[in-house]
View (cartoon, rainbow, N blue to C red):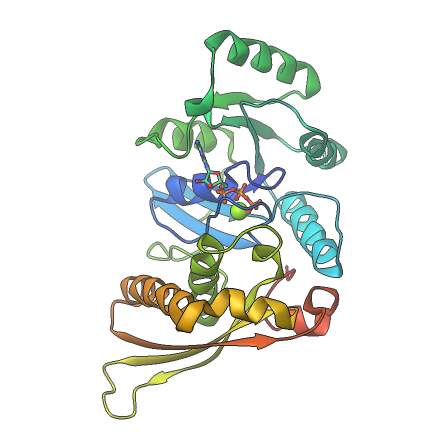
Length: 297
Ligand SMILES: Nc1nc2c(ncn2[C@@H]2O[C@H](COP(=O)(O)OP(=O)(O)OP(=O)(O)O)[C@@H](O)[C@H]2O)c(=O)[nH]1
Ligand SMILES: [Mg+2]
């Protein structure tokens, strides 16, 4: 029996969370086209005859601009320290400064690591991939270099098998039926709503948004329905109308999409109430963003 922690790491936006969800065959981590989407350390558990892999998704590794960023960076370093194997993710666009900075952390810890070269669906010419693989071999002694498209590929069995080859012998860490090990339901629901906000906002808005679930309770008139009360938090008054939209249209469409996904996740009808709240400078206030679960672990 094999088991271990497998941490995905790399700069923002390379596709770590997409890959994490694929490897699990289940959506746990939210994804967006904006950098710095993931703010939590998320565990995803997959158990098979060979043993158990606990995947760990992490925030993108970058130079912190706010206290939130510093906490997220610590989260990544902790997740690297505890890893039995690291999946370092880059893209076909080649090694950037922030990729190299993430790799430096892996070097410091001399971790066993695979290099995942993601987004090969965007590769203009095959020769570029060969030279990128070659260059990558000189940067670190990767145990495996694995080009893929987290977005397009259907089968992840081969990568999972390769991961098992490198994991230590050990007992399962979580009950077999477990799929996500660490987060309270409120955080997962908050992430669903935040993903829908990210899908409908641009430029500096996505990074200024947080979500807090204030209450989850059975409906008063219909206990089969779950009442979820959520606040979408922005750090400036000017952003409130951007989230709400003309006549409340944007907030309504965000809320509808979030509710549908929450219902799928929980397997029961949800009544979602959302409001937009301003908390100035929340990204520089650990007492506030800890409440949302960001930068923990
Ligand atoms: N074309 C293409 N896009 C991809 C692929 N994998 C992920 N993406 C897209 O890249 C964007 C970022 O994906 P995420 O999975 O959120 O990236 P991440 O590395 O987790 O980002 P952070 O959480 O910000 O660090 C999304 O728009 C994804 O749909 C891929 O293989 N091909
Ligand atoms: Mg992510």
